[in-house]
Length: 265
Image (cartoon, rainbow, N blue to C red; front, top):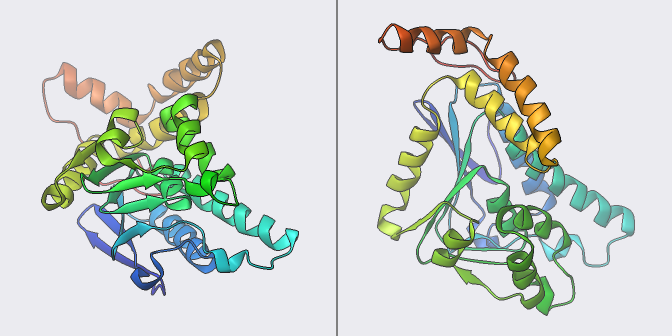
């Protein structure tokens, strides 16, 4: 499928989705967000084992397109942020692990995009901000994803001050997994997604889905959910194959197809 604002490239088991509106600083305009959601849902039903989310141009993403909000009605702004929420949730709904490859500034909704990915690697020259706090529109929706990565005090510091943090700080706070020199960014991202996709695709899909279901529950409810999830998962063919391979001291051969996509053996 051809996309107007995205580039898609599949190399073996990894599909890279690249935001490709450098002249617009990869702003999350309404049509861009719909297109990215469509692309992610299509990838979910392919043999891709993992997804890299990247961007072209001097900025990873400048966040929402203010032109979509200028003079808009309440119905129009509500639709804009609902479409954005659907896109962010889709990153976590698809069975494949998604790694953001951040080469430059990610601000407002662009920072939210990074926070919504399962994993993230950034160039040490990249920076992150939710600048609404020093302007006229507070970053309410970006704060949802960012606070779930870095905690209340740090999230509110970013939101209230609007100040940018560098990649090293983002890694220290947990917004990204690691910061590396720009020349090493592609290699480091590929290494992470390859390590995050080894083993059973079904196991990874169940694990990703289960994580997002339990992570914000009270501990007793989280354990109730996880116990049932793990007990059920232990009976799947891939789990039994992994157990047998370990006991028999041989390489496992996984064949189970995850829901919403397919697995390679």
